Length: 373
Image (cartoon, rainbow, N blue to C red; front, top):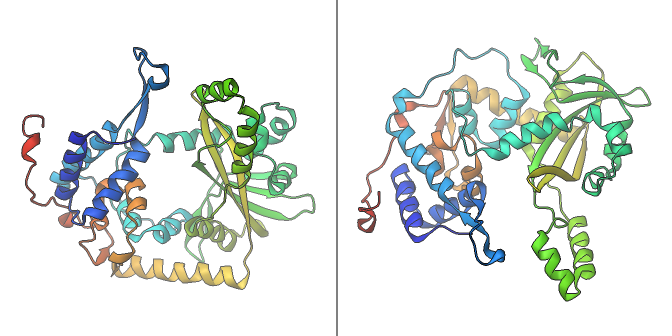
């Protein structure tokens, strides 16, 4: 997987126009952008069947072109309507993820990128794999891919619980807490067999399934007699897949536990579903679960970030840690086309996000591309 020489030169030029300076940042950004937006395309005319699938990074370059066009005329970016006096768990989570991303998403009416295919897949999985519907499926399915996802004991406990609330239902109300100025909607609220109420927030993450090799690879391994050994290696690799639960997602669950008073919530689960693709269809192959309660450590974590969040919203400015910019995270961020902070040129971030700071930077156009662009 790589850019063509011409694509790479042009993409590097576009990033310098957007404001990137360090060659290392440019290389990392382009690599992550290629991973998130690059696609394999099937070439039916390929003489060698092992080379029928060919990689293209065109969508990654197109995304940079779209960003450049947007930043040419920042005054045309539409603004959101007046902000609500309430805060949501999603806003707090996004702020902890990145203050700049929070400011952008709550200042502008941002566009949906055509290339955000994984976000669309996640939304579809959210609807099709809703936990409130899974008990019967988990007991009756014979699909080996599907059944692997339910081997976590915590998932079994959720499946045995009674669904009290499903946030994605069409008639699901929002929970409000006027005392804390909170407004939100968790994915689920359940009641377990002991009568205890708990909240669940689920996230869908694209993660390659080691036990899902290509048909070509399987045929080759069977031909040379290594299929059984390779399948065992793949199983062991799948079993070792680690789960790291991100702070912003933990804060989202904690926000529900602190602010929802309609039910006596005792604890919460953060569920990560790892999914992959097979024959053009998505499937979940592994689940990771973290249980959370309002113990002193978690309360300290929540209150620390809530205080910082509220101070930022009230004061409208805070220092931005340039050295902490994670280029890979920036390249995958949905707010990236509007962001100026990923370039490390700004040492403070404002709320609302300032259009006047969005601009392009002069840089020489590569001479060897003048005939092509």
